[in-house]
Structures are given as structure tokens and as C-alpha cells.
Length: 600
Image 1 (cartoon, rainbow, N blue to C red):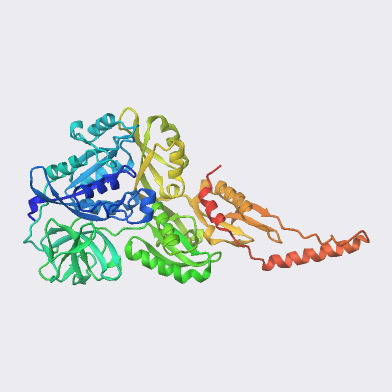
Image 2 (cartoon, rainbow, N blue to C red):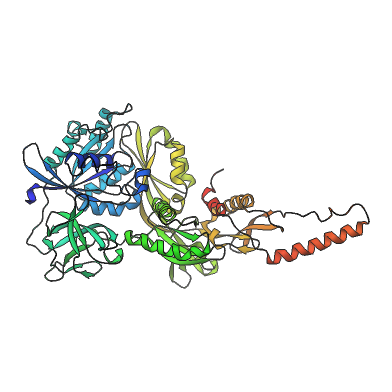
């Protein structure tokens, strides 16, 4: 098909604003999927995606459409993940497009990720088509939302398309707007090949399947190909397009979207954002924007039964085949034995991986509280990067500890400004500025340490604003802070999985709260179990789990007191000996207590 009749676009929206439902209607309208094959959220293939109402894995689909002017068009929809943790994947998917359909809920209006994704689309200089969805809801305010979007985008309100994706109202107008307003792709078919990898998945027969948008040149089965960032070379196993299932084709030309089966065995060799070119006479200019994604949040994952260690390793390997951003390495803990230190893009990514391990691989796992990556400058001038508090060297060797800070934007109705500011201050936040979206909604800009966000910040934000606020965050910088290691000792043994790095001013209060919680959670033994919190060499809090006591005097009916004293003395010696060899089993709730420290 002529390049003038190709349209590449993406749908961007906040979570649960109707992105997947609109994609379903477009597939039905263009007869890409028959009514018999149709199901809700067709492009969301994972059960987790359907349950949570958020796209986790991006996908692409090619649709054929005959416009009202009688011309035939090839429309490529490149779906994007719907969460801030997958920001980089969203930016690569948008780079593969010329236009974006911006979907906003008619009852909720503009929210955090609406703006975050909008700015990404504007960075790529995409043609925007604003769509107001869910106009059939009783609480819909299409007029007000159109005015809100007009103030934000500068696009006249009458150019915004009111639709109900669920009922199919107004969806044909969206297709017409895509054809009329989104420009055809640029690119030179005769130039050396350059194709952007905007996503990938692993297939057990074809290896890694790269989702590509051909920018210049053409790909065919005979071309020997290579990737510019990783330098990996391969002969394509199969070339094809999504309809929405994978359908092989002979070649892909500039402007087209499809897939290339590489035969690679790991996703690391074919990373998102990389550029594919030919081995002979290929381009040396990579497409802009490629970067290696760095995990931001780390947690220890251990099997509850030690015999499952091999199964856990195999499961993480399989998950990594489809998710190059997942990193892990073996780790041992005195309390939990063998497991893995796993790096995630964010807390949502961590939740997803944990749930997939439990559901898809039927594993019983125990996860430690999440931590972040710290930079430690030693007195010797050496800089260490640590993602586990247990690895922190002795405090006498440390010159300073730097922690990651994030820029956050909180979108909230005006009446909740006070509670939100109060929450940010409690989390060591630094106020930057306030922006007014309209008479009722504001954006609060703060800088906050990542370690304060990852545990319960989002839950608390929803609580103090009755669910109305939403937030977005980006990495800012590493800053030196007055941080110390908080150790927890159970029965005089340090438990490395409960160690934390905290601000010195908060060490005493956090230690006290954690010790009190552990006292409730750790089961009683036949001997006294002391629980202590220590900062450096100093014990800052202590509590005892009292012993269960067997009544050794039950068989004594009266008689001489010396007999009773002898029995009690014998019991005392036995308890002392038991304490020397006593092991205390820690329940999963003990590790989860770290996540609920701030709950009063």
C-alpha cells in the first residue's frame, strides 16, 4: 500500500479511562476481528491486565479501513502500557507513531497519567486527537472537560470528539479523525534500513519476537540483520504483521509496523528502543532515545519451602524472557536461607511479578520489604552502589550515603491541598511549586526521596483525598543525606532481611514502632525472646516476648517447700540451655510489618 495511505497512531490515557475498550470498538468497526472472536479488552491478553484494568504489555495491530471519501487506508494501532512504571516503553511506542488519540474520562477529567503521556506525545511532536469518553455515564461532564482540555491543549472544544466506547457512540468519528488529521509516515524506502524496536516478547519456537516500526528502507527474509546498541546479528526467522494475531508477510517497508522473529534466546540481546539495520550496507545512525532501563526498587524474594529454590530460579528466568527490565541475582539470608535479590521498575512492577510467580508458576513465595539503590562514598574515595541494607559497610568506613530523589506531581481537587502538603512534609518532601489547572484542580510539585514513596505513599494519598488525587513521578538525582542503618536483633541475632536504611532523625521512632509490632507478631517460645532495634553499635529500643511456662509444680500436693524449689531450679537451668540453642521462626507478617510502620 502507498505510504500516503498508512496511518500509525497510539491511544494514551490515564488508568481506567477506556483505552482498551476504545481499541476493541476500533477492531470491530474495521472488521479486523469477527464478532465470534471478539472479547472484552482483546489486546490485553493477561488475566492480570483484565482484572486490574491496566495494560501491562504493549501490543500492536493492523487494521484496514475504507474512509468516507472512498479511499482505503492501512491503520496501525500501537498500544501502550498504562502505568507510570513503564514510562520508557510508552515513549518508545509513541516514537513509532505520527499521531495519538488522547482519551479522557467525561466524569473524572484530566489526571496524572493523562498529562504524563500527553507530554511524552508532545515531545515526539505527534498530532493529537482529543477524545472525551464515557459520555453515557450519569456523572459525565463533557462540556466542562472539553473546556478543561481546551485550556490545556489550545485545541478548540468543538474539535474534541465525544464518544462512549462501551456503546460504540462516536467511534466512527474517531477513525475519520485519525485518517484526516494524522499525517502519513515519512521515511525513504531506498535509504539504508533503520527499524525501531518498540517492544518484544519471547516465543519458544521463534525466539525473541521484536515489534518494529520501519523508519527507512525495507526488511525482507533474505536480509542479514544486526542491532546497533547490542551489536547482536541474526537472520530473520519470520517477518510479519499483527492482525491482531501474527501473520507472516514477505517484507516490511518504510512506514509500516510489524514484527521480526530473531531466533534470540534472551530479550537482553534485543532491547526496547534499539535500532535494527542490515549487516551489509546498513545505517550507522541509531534512532534517538535508546537507553538501558534501570531498576529503581529492589526486594528479596524467597521460597517459603527451601526445596522450591530451583523452581523459583526457573520461573524468574522465564519471566525475564518476556521482560528485559527484570533483573535478579542469588542472595542468601540468615533468616530466610536461599533466594534472589530482584530489581523492579517500580512498586506496581513488583506487584505484577509477585502475582505472576504465584499464579502462573504456582509458587509459594515470601517477599521482603522493598528498598532502593543507595550510593555509598567511603573514606577511601571509593563509591559503592548497594540495593540491600544488609550490604552496608561499617559506619566508620562511610563518608556519606546518597539516596535517590524523585520529582513528583500530585493532581488533586483544591480542597485537599492541605492534607496532601501535610503528607508530603511527613515523607521528607520539599515543596517546589503549585500549578492551577482550573478553578477546582491543582498540580502540586514536590521533590521526595524514593524510599518514602515506594512503601505506602500512594495508598495514603488516596486516603487523604478520598480517592480523587493521582500522581506521577520521575527520577531527579542522588543526594547525600544523614542516613543510618537500622538493625533488628531477634534473640540477640541480627535478622538481615529486617534491616533498613533510615534517616537518622527517624531511626528511634521507626525502631520503636517496629519492635512493638514484632512483639505482637513473633510467636511465644518456651524461653524469653528479646527483640532489639540497633542503630550502629547502640541499642535504641527493646521488647521481650515472654516465655510460655510449663507448670512443673502441678504434681506437688503440699509437702516440703524444698522439693518445689528444686523443681523450679531444674526448670530454670533447662530454659537457659534451651535459649542457647533456641531458633526463632519469623512469620511472613513480620516482614510485612515494615510496610505498615507509619500506620498509627
